Length: 127
Image 1 (cartoon, rainbow, N blue to C red):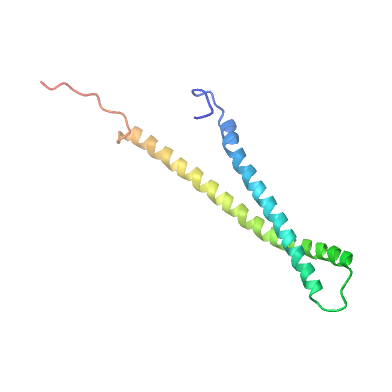
Image 2 (image 1 turned 60 degrees about the vertical axis):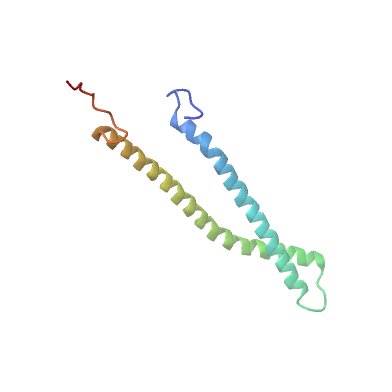
């Protein structure tokens, strides 16, 4: 392995070293997307209130009401997307693990059965 000295590695440590950057990027992306969605919803709510017509409402009241309305809208969107992202991450991790498991089982079978990567038979001298 890249981070380990010849066989002295604990697999949990290696998995943490490899997966930590992936989790950080995923969490940062989700947080940034959530904040962007909240601000977009808020701007839409403000625009809706100002385009309702005359008389113009108080700017402070519009901002407060838009923030509350955007938060409610965001809650339903985040619930749906969290389910989707969680399923996608889980499916990808499962595919990787089963793929690595199948590859390891194939190498083991080839080793036991003497396939292309398996042990070679000792050569016998021809007379």
